[in-house]
Length: 90
Image 1: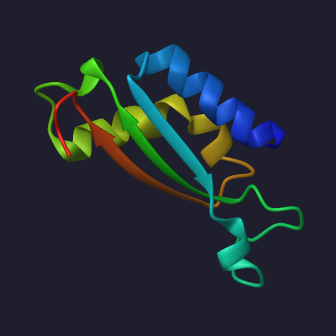
Image 2 (image 1 turned 90 degrees about the vertical axis):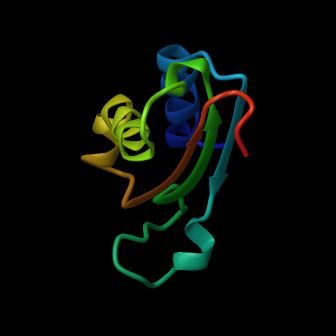
């Protein structure tokens, strides 16, 4: 994986201590579209399960993830799809 993938993984692991974390670089499907970069690492899908999300509404969970990845979203990451779950959900 690349440096942006690694940064996303490291920041999410540190911020949320997830019990499940899946990160998919979906950039290849967006080649030639707005925000696509040569070499990929511009579009990601994240599924994260963490006790930190228990009792928190879906939109608030996504905002928590976006805050943790603010630096990446302000620069190299054009699009981020987030599925944030509490343990036992989905």
